[in-house]
Length: 181
Image 1 (spheres, one colour):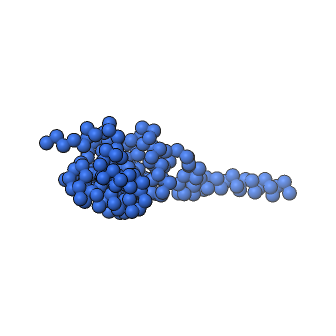
Image 2: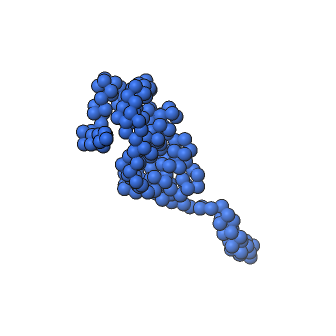
Image 3: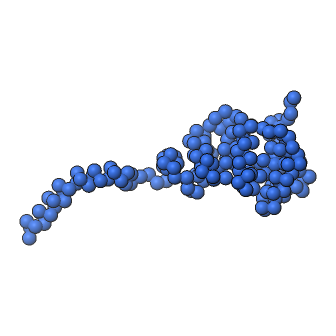
């Protein structure tokens, strides 16, 4: 009986190199699961899931704007509207790239056209102010009305304030929206 057990153990040991080769073909067999690096690796592999795209919030809030930008841009390109609104915020504030109000307004447009209420609110504010795009208060009010119809409280607050953007944005940012020319 001992010889059979030893023979089986020897056969298993001899098979290890072949098993290791199979593992290489299978990819990561025990990957990190709860790290931002894992999320970025998944995004680079095209895995733009809801949880991977949402992780961009924590990645950018931790100050890792470059990786967050990579994540949000890939997710936005795959149609995740929340990532589009985050790209707008990153472009508006120069996080992980240059500050670019026109590009931020373009992300807001994409999110709004996809039906995202936050994108509609942001696009409406862009149009009311003429920030990053030509000023069009009437179109801005229509966008805000659409966001309010979807139940976005901030849009309803803006309606109640007669569409005055100062009602929903901090005074500290008002300098950004001044038309200097």
